[in-house]
Length: 489
Image 1 (spheres, rainbow, N blue to C red):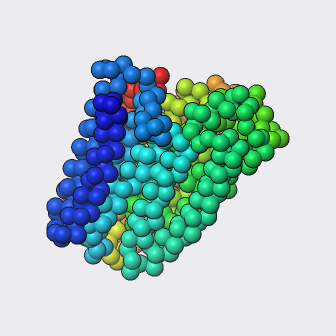
Image 2: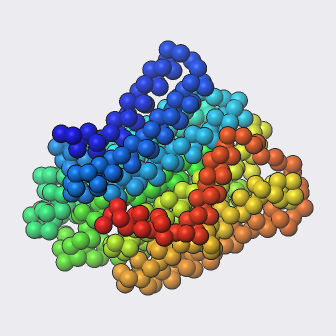
Image 3: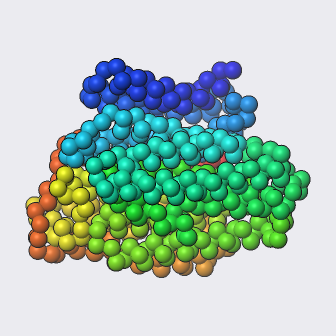
């Protein structure tokens, strides 16, 4: 049917492009062709998503949650919104990666193709209506990340990060697969819409379903880097290529959050009175709230003592996973909308900070410390100002995007009756100001100790886009808020 064509168009373009550029690279070793071809593929995919949204909303009037491919995939406004976030993250990463690879004296076309495949996996997650499809999307994304994390094969840190990510990722995959198997054994279905009805009617084997649900949540918590499954994140992000670390900590985290959103919305939270084996779904919601609180606190406290800027951003990304979990806990329209807004805001400010670091790193400078930024503003005022904006936004200081993102998450949690969680989140945000503002102090109020200079070029297109996005979302957030409400209504 014609609506299936429009629904699948972005996925088809991206999957075909991934294969096309992989084959072309095998035939014709032209780095410029592959780079710009991959960039064009992402841009075309980005535009095609708007065509799909327009078709469903303005032309046909089809229901917003439209199932295709025999129910394996679901297409609605919220999933399309996250498609835009994922593809835009891929564009930002791609634009900055070529210069970064050259600075490290390694440039391989496979890097660009892996970005496409990772984005494709993320889009599969956002459209999943079946736990098997969700698993395939997560693994497609994860396999790309395993390779990207160890892309600098001559770097011990990069290889170590890939090995850690692969081993722990495989361990988490085991939890996810076993959980899905238990859910199927308890319900005889893997379709989320069917599972929702079965849970609501109580037509499931409670013990097996509970075991499966717990295992699925553990697998997804690992992908999000939520406490107590967060230990891998700092080592993996620190050892990975810096542009990849930014991509994984933003788009990768957002896709895993969306997977958790699907499980929570269909299987747990809508039915507060449903009893599982020994507890109710309301108690599961409380457990997720506790995990959210501990994730925020642990991530920020450990980030306090970090001197390596990249490692500091890695630990802070754990804390931001805790903030995003607040939207899951809220289980209301405000919470879902806050997740959408904060995912985009976090994309701009976090990936922007990582991209600034990538322009400073060279083959000799692998890890930039706080002290390395001493006096940075004197010779590079624009870059220092840009980095300061990202730090202030990550800390949640107005008038930048991070402030309004946290505000929306806090309001949604309060409306859901989780005032105590909001208080903890505010305390965690105050703690984070120490190290975020600490970097600014080094840049503006310390004497220079090491001469570090950013490389100006194509990466600064991505950095400027991140800067503009961080500022605009902070000054006029209502446009994106209205857009997300429009898509998820």
